[in-house]
Image 1: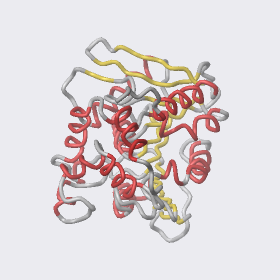
Image 2 (image 1 turned 135 degrees about the vertical axis):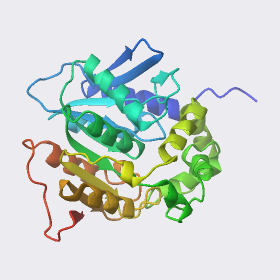
Image 3 (image 1 turned 180 degrees about the vertical axis):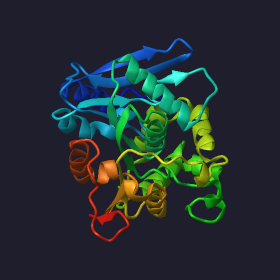
Image 4 (image 1 turned 45 degrees about the vertical axis):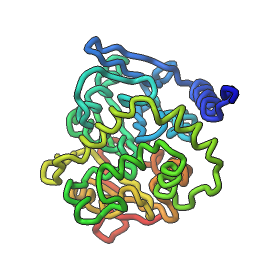
Length: 317
């Protein structure tokens, strides 16, 4: 058999890289000197008069694939920074830490190395755990928080009590870090309200080869660390104004976790529920998500959160 000479995924990755560059972003790699190298996209010229927003990706492909639809419109109003979390894209570490707390510390170190001291953070899925941790650890630096479909409030016992479609962390890992076309199709069914059907296995295998095989063991360890011994009582209550965005039909992190987070933060958070959307709100509802981001982030500090008058901080869109 002849060697594969064309990769749709690698070509798409190049297109996203070009798109980020034309949006005014440049690629920056920071070596912390402790075995950690951290990659981040940031503005070619940081404008001090513009607010700064940090976009943190979830599991799966690198940051470019998850935030491509947002960087160009957001760059018109914000200094936009888009990091690759450890073991994704060009970021890695030889250190043993795997917690979202350590990820958050590395993101902050990279931002400080680039001279950024104040920012709002937006996190999708796993990135939402990191964003929340940043807000808790660095309250003086993080001004506003957006959590997208991130089960920050999950507890280890939720798996045993049947909250999720999977029965164990091992089963979740097989799907979230899919290594076969069949498992990737399962992930798409869980992630999308209307998943694309009949995708050829060759396209799915190509995506897995390019995006899902590197640092596989380390990514598994990230998921184990997220779940192990997790209790709501241990979760700090962040004080920044917080917008929580969730897909109504999310099957990865059920929407009950969004309501749980609103209750945990009491009157400091607002939940927006996107109808006819699953877990991948950045892809299925990119225009609606952008509209909420722009409205929530581009406001004076510490305004009162919008409420629909029902007392639970929930809005249906």
